[in-house]
Amino acid sequence: MDTTYVTTPVGRRPMTLAMMLAQHKAGTLPKDHRRNKWKLFRSVCEARRDLCVSDRALTVLDALLTFLPDDELSGSASLVVFPSNVQLSIRARGMTPATLRRHLAMLVDAGLIARKDSPNGKRYARRGKGGEIDEAFGFNLAPLLARADEIEAVAERLRLEREHLRLAKERLSICRRDIGKLIAAATLEEVPGDWTSLFGAFRRVVDGLPRQATLLEVEAALRQLEDIRSGVVNQLETHVKAQNTGANESQGERHIQDSDPESLFEIEAANHNGEIQQPGPEIFVTQTGGGEHAPSAVNLGAVLKACPQVNSYGPNGAVRNWQDLTAATEIVRTMLGISRSAYHDAVLAMGAEGAAIVTACILEGAERINSPGGYLRSLTLRARHRSFQPGPMLQALLRGSRQNS
Image 1 (cartoon, one colour):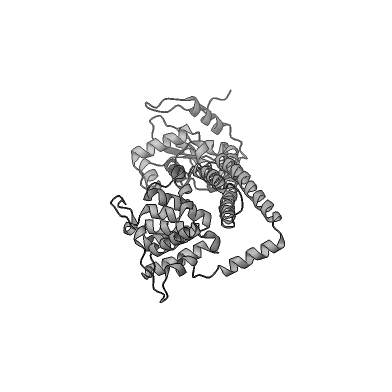
Image 2: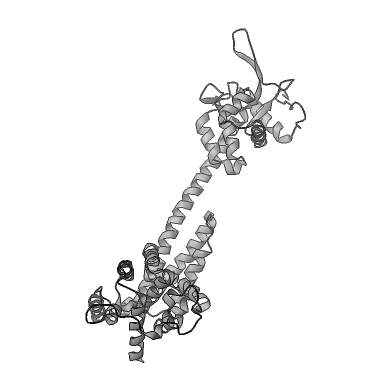
């Protein structure tokens, strides 16, 4: 048995079986085995997680590869490099000696390089009469070449996993968008169904997904969302099939008539001169308790009386304070198809509670509004010019609820 490949480390460093295995692979490397060193290094970078090496260790490996004159690693050539610590530190982007030693040890433990120590531990090469290297002491890169097939297979597997994860996330994003808009459409069209429960199930799946989700986690969430989407689509298709042509045409005419941007709320809240009326006293707080978050001292009870639908979207199915109202209207915003940017602009123009009040009002009259997002943007623009306040809108809804009762 050939044992000439075995070299124990100098000094206090112990010998390990992993080091012996790496040396064995280097000593039995076929002479026709070859790879481009930079392509192989890229595969090592891609397989870093499974190889248990850090990004700093890869910086050291990159520096070691630069000391080989050729771009090709070959089993027929010497793969031992013998840089000084100063030279190696410079090529490792100024890494300190202590850090350098730590990451060299990591590369040895990972089986990517092997130490070939001289009798005194120094790194050098002994040259023959013709100037060629007879023997060198330093770091042997042959284990890296010996594991090339394994490293490339790991890198390819991880590449495929990343691609599958990317595609799964794309499908997940589309499914999320579909469910949100379909439920919003069902709510606006007053399609029979427990849309609140479906939306709650949808949010539980989405909110339970970690920020750095694995492929298995994304695929599991995707399966759940696809089931929810199928249920939503089936309910909507059943509803559509149940409608006759005359009912569809009537519904279409009603939406066209109600697409006038001058909403019912604004018409009722304006006087004959086109000026916005001041809100009635019933929507203001008559005693303390509105809280620091209450906009312009508007009574939360008046908001809930004018907009009873928003109450069911609060935490645990109820709105008890202004924080609950803003949380509820965040869900309502999504259901109505109001974009995050449109809602953010409304918050800047009206305040968080003002935007929440307006969104609750829009929910209450959703059946008469073709584009809730466009309508909110219109009110936001008017609020910026100080020609709109939520109070008159609430007053109009309160008058309407009295007339209907």
